Length: 157
Image 1: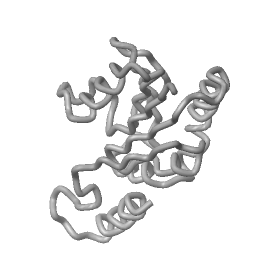
Image 2 (image 1 turned 180 degrees about the horizontal axis):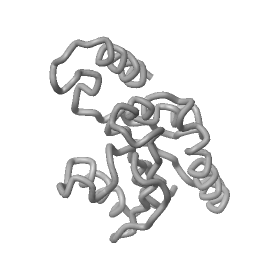
Image 3 (image 1 turned 180 degrees about the vertical axis):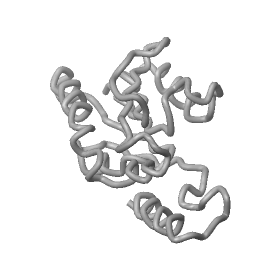
């Protein structure tokens, strides 16, 4: 059985100029003999591109450019429609392989939780090694508390 792996990442592949664990995971999955495709799903400029090495990057635009609107990455309503083309692509792969494909989603951060409601995943892996709902600054303002609740709900899903 062939596998399609969707790795939910924090940013576009080259954004940080570092190879994090999620990069190594995507490359490891790509190199497995039963892997049909690896899709790097991330916030970014928007659009699809094939990276060197064959991994497909699928970037989803944020609600608005300012950093304050990044909370939308954790709220379904802002991404359901934007992820519809990805769902169609996954279903097309399933159809072309006549149901002999396994769909696996790997969350490396709790963004895009709406994915859990989309196609039927054969496996969901939540591999987050960070406390995403905690503010980096330690600040406890009304805004950071609201952001923390939104992200904690996404993580709980």
